[in-house]
Image (cartoon, rainbow, N blue to C red; front, side):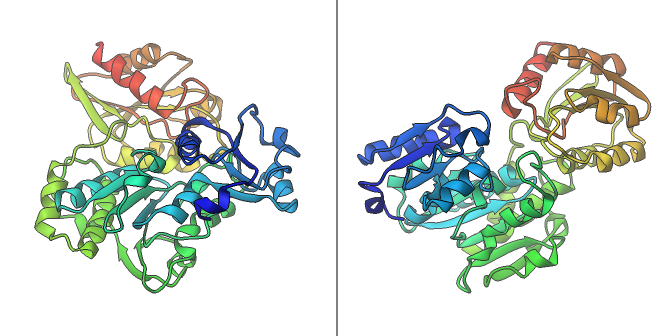
Length: 406
């Protein structure tokens, strides 16, 4: 779909918000007319409302397999998205990064390595800018790094020149209808690659993923980065480093230059980041932990006596692997459970478990009541945040602010 194909068409942007605002601004700058449909909270409210349009750009919050989208497709409506249009319009090669956890760190580290080597690089996604902010500035020799979620990948009909897949485990089951659908959504990052493209894949991925597409495949795991010096905590971050290093070497960056950037790279906000130590207690913010695997990885990364703050919105995750990990971890001395999932997991947890706090100061006070010098207080919720906080950024910032006020 090129821009000229949009002129004169009846277009709707369905769901403005963060993901489509820059798209709307871009279309306006190109004098392309569109309607905005933003007055809905449940996808079923859109059934029949999309059928009159020729093209709709759906927000990632509108499931591709929703009844509203299915009905519109049956009426001949073209279903697109901000990400899908960007792939059509981008004049440079795209490096796409996906995975249940680690996308932001890997994308940011890779961008820093490439920029330091002199390669003009654009970083976009949840961790970077919106790609439509800079689309008109991109030149063919540049590289674009896109952090891609399952929501963005699901209906793509193009794959990036270099695809990075870090890991795939169940997540977003309040949005996707099944684990199989979630995994299928991720597959678009590889499905349309040619033999001129590259797939950088974790060795533990399902065989079905390893065999997707026609790209040249390179496999990695944490051992590939075991000799790298880094400020990042945990084995999962060695996997992120290994993936970024493989891509950088593929593009021609020398390993010594990669090692230098890795050594200097700071943990991203709300991603297993040490805030400070107060009276011998270390406070770590992992507020962007929105799934079971990220919380387990955070627990594995810490060897000191641990007070874990966990919980939030119930999005249909199976908490049994996390509960099992907590039961097996000898260094966890106390737990603070918050949010909707409290009744689902608190009764199954061992030792000292405190519940009922609804505000961050109360949550932190409960954690402090169980901690002493030499301990670590880890905020790694393992699920979404929409019950007590606006979003994951809000809860992370509230935790950091509360610690800084101690």
